[in-house]
Image (cartoon, rainbow, N blue to C red; front, side, top):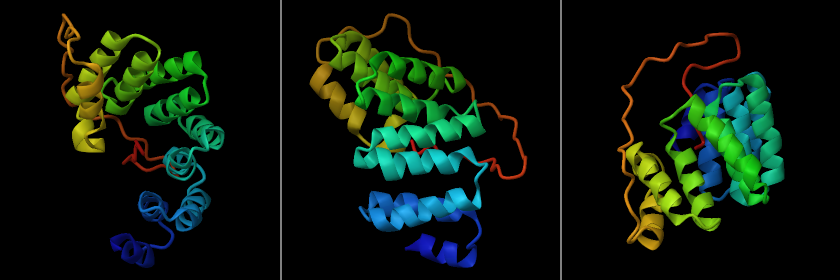
Length: 198
């Protein structure tokens, strides 16, 4: 694996170890993922991305949503503007049956990044599963508009095929925001590039 070489070359770089941990998780090797993701947190304890990635790849992907929320809370404590941690925490809250708190977190995620396709996907699923398919389909359309397929795969397209036949499209198109350069924070222990995990 390419990340093995990267970690060997840069063993103290939390990002390299974290990325390898995410890859190991996606390959189904939970033991290796745990070692890497725990090591990333150890190497970068002030980096919100490390906690978010561990929460997502190690805990949420394995159905351990309460444990995932602990890491998302840590990520948010490190960076209260880290929208992906709110998005992931919202999904885990939904999986635990906390629908209102899930919606609140996902809405906060969209306030922090209105182009968060994963948050739209999650809000769409919640709307469909709680009896509002038209709203769900609107959210799915937003997810696609903001690049869900390119970033995460065809899940939303498949959900639309099942739930959105015959639904009315939104009456007002969702505006596409211009790309802006976000200010960077080069504080010790923080990286300027983020891993959204989603």
